[in-house]
Length: 188
Image (tube, rainbow, N blue to C red; front, top):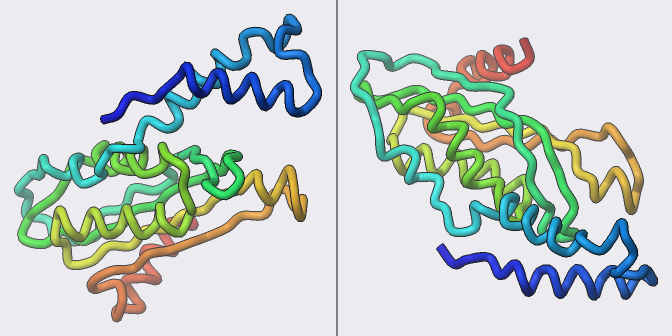
């Protein structure tokens, strides 16, 4: 994984502070470049991570029915404006051949996907495709609900608006009842 260049980030933030007409040496701003560089190191830590790495550990379990982990909280950065968006990821899958993964692995895979400049649509499909490629389940359904600061604090300024995306794979594509079950359980 290439190391994030914190020194370069600090220089860039200092230039931004100057460009907006502020004094980067003012007491409240003097350490801001360093704080931003440390924050970026953390929030962009998924840049070289592959979410499939979390699905290398599988368990054999005689279970070929729905597994749903819902309300996985996440924070990411919009790649268009570099402002945050945040919300919840819901992941449902139906294991095939007794191949299940640890529940925490689903949350870790989400973290690997969201910790980079992102689009909500890409997050949704990347998580679904990683599960399909790694676990080969009967079906996968991923639903992401998020509020985007690029719509809330700038531009159209519509706080509270939620964007919902879904990725549907395998048996969920053609089985309306199975899809409906997942959506019903997410709403509860």
